[in-house]
Image 1 (tube, rainbow, N blue to C red):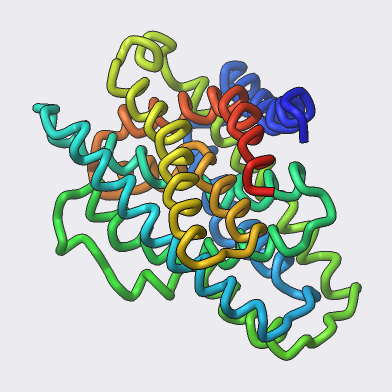
Image 2: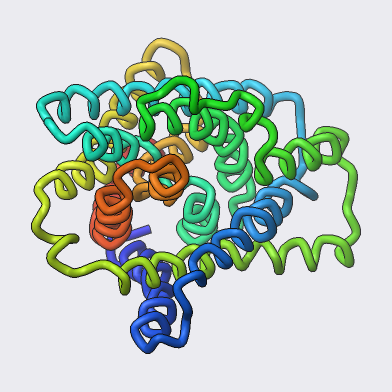
Length: 314
């Protein structure tokens, strides 16, 4: 895709935040609306999206190598960005803010935006969507371990059981046997699952709009840490990923679709998980919210520019 087409595709996604912003500013949505919508997102629509992305896709044993590469890089690339962010924020004296910044720097919006963006940028390419779904398995494991630790700074807050016992991962595990056995699911069953899964992106953007309405504009704009986090997440992270993937490809050839999937995923903005954990565990909610909002808004410009590098991979 060219710059303008990609720009319009990402802009359409961000526009979905407007209803949440307007309704919240008009006081039509109550204070607890975000929690209700987030529950619907986590327990209904995202699991539906994961299942719909896996079922009725053709499996072959040759895919297992590519799945292994996806999971390997999902872990390695996130760890690399995590330690780079820790280094860059080492001098920050505000410990809760520092932890929030580090988490926001490497936790990408893979679940809510990753699959929909991949569908929009590469329409009809089931393989890239499938690789994004596989990436989510490793990502969710990282979120509930390193993600929780990054926000809290306390190993006791990490609950290993959550690696498996979270709705998207449970849904994925239940769907995988049907995928591996190439079981055809009737369209009458797939249709409601797809409808629910398709709610994921609009819901996540509406929640983003509500959070933007609740934030004072100056809080979003006058903190240098927010800009640094955004630069790490939207520029440094994908470029580091791009370089590491190309370096490994020189030694061991990697499927081009695997490389594209990993690169595009690395370009996603900060995940709302960082903010959710800050709220759950008493972290710096304001910093996490500012970083999430800023990176999501600015990805309108960074993703189209970064997508031009895909021509090198292809």
